[in-house]
Length: 436
Image 1 (cartoon, one colour):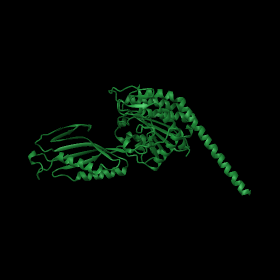
Image 2 (cartoon, rainbow, N blue to C red; image 1 turned 60 degrees about the vertical axis):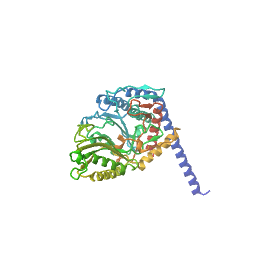
Image 3 (cartoon, rainbow, N blue to C red; image 1 turned 30 degrees about the vertical axis):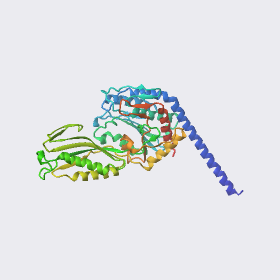
């Protein structure tokens, strides 16, 4: 055997030995994570029950703050610096913002929210058990369960001795269910953290199936349509002088929206509110109004309020252009103005980085014996805070939270058996991403 060949064999053995040691160490660390979560699940299940029993409807600022204080205390005990920010500039309770910085590895942004849709006047206020594992409770899945999974995963990383080697920022917003205004101030903490981060992970409930996560979310934007016609006796409708009136013109526009855009994949637009007649008056909040008219008078005014959801900025802009063109092609003696709201929830488009997280997460799930994970259809994923990381982070995904059903209703449930499972997958995902 030549000396060169011997040197090659020795080098190969050293590489194999180093790789084997690295893999063994990785396996030991992951076992520590799993053990920590198993030992702490009971405590964090109790924490979840305590949080669910605190009313934190978005407009119950005191309740939102109280849930924030509960989670702040837990994160500080794990070594995070945490604060509850003021929301007075956007008329909300504010957010829980925590950070744990290191000079090593990628920078993680973890996203949750403190508020629910159940305000103080809602009869649904406390948790109960439907059986030994299914909890019925306000916000258990959307998303106090996800918040607790974040904290449990941080506990496991801490006890496995690797949290100090990771850079993590956690934002639990106080107004996800009913965003404050102006939106740029309401979501400023999110966007600032997104600019800092490399990877963003959201802990919403995906579509209720733990075998899925969200690699893309459709954005959500409001629109309004105001149509004018010429008031006159109905006997003169369709004449050159009177034209069609505002209601016919509105019908034409909405029908054309449907005919030209309804087949566009993952694009939806919904006219959720309409009033029309001789006299129309909109309520100050835009959520209602009044209309007066007679059957023998051509309608003078019609107002419509709706939303549009798209899976990418490009798709949204293309749809808006078509809608504006349709609105401009008026019937005789009518005019119409279409406006889109400022801000809104941006789309979280599927990217190579988002798909890469899915690949890692899928492998983690299978390695742990929990089966494969696939991406949620964007049609089944509503707008969420993760969307405000769009364009800032290289990798983002959502849906790592507690599996449940019937969000936003008094039938909302969360599967407590999934609490440790989702925490294990999240913590090991973060560990592996930190080593990639």
